[in-house]
Image: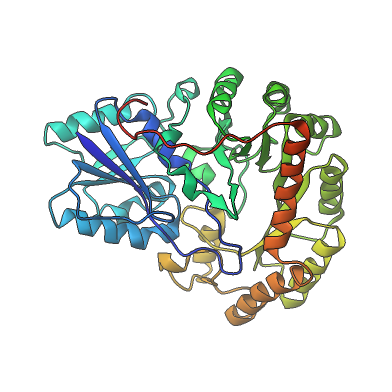
Length: 417
């Protein structure tokens, strides 16, 4: 039996330097595909997709709302020839009802615990179910093993000759309930840390010295995070992550463990943000701000002041986005209640288009403010140059320490997981 896993392409964030990280969900999915199934993977963002082949099953991995239109096209191309299509991933769960109109089967939730063996058995019996609903039915976190990265076309994930980061998670879930985030809907407000030894085992298996810990937040359980950082120190990897608790002891451990920079959400010009960025910098950890524009307390002038503030505090990088009311987020519920949603077109839910009515400005003013933020922040040095400086710092450290990066490799994408 042969399955084909596809990660559909989408239009990337306008103004952002274009690069591609290896996707995480497909390699997690691949690790759970039964051993008697031959698996092919195509990341359409870096490789051409041929839809004239005839696998026994096409499995669409849909992370983003903006991937949905292309996912529907791919499904249509296969289904018209009688090839069944199943879809899973974050946006499959967020948009399951609409997605069900375009595919043969929708898989909701996490794949561990033999759940894909059930799909295989049903497919073999000619009884593929229209819905495999494991939403909020979380498998024991101990079952999460090492992702199967051999399916990746590694040479495609390079930028200017530098190998991009490999993605790995040390935990799942999040106990917070941030207004633009759908994580509580996807998995409840439960923090689910993996056993440290399983995290170490997976990271040791990755032949890349640079990683992205894609955990929702590393500020949820200080005791577990301290144990994680201490376990990472001997591995001599460099990594980026989402926020870490602003505690000097933890930040120093993070630096020793290889923390390179963090993604930090910034909404205002408060001293809290100023001090947080300063603390990261005090521990030689760079900061990339994820800046959401268009919140109800913002107008054009306040966005301009926010950009000035980011330059003043020495933010290393900034990724500006327009507030986007994704399905099953608190902000969408609020905007829908007030009748302020302008469109549900998924192709526009790319975080660089205005899809709602702002409170203190027009949609056009917000769109222009978005462009202005990018242009002002990067007026003296482009995002590409700033990102290059961060990479060069790591490369110099690797050279000084004598660590040589192993070259990318790609093994056969057949059964053995």
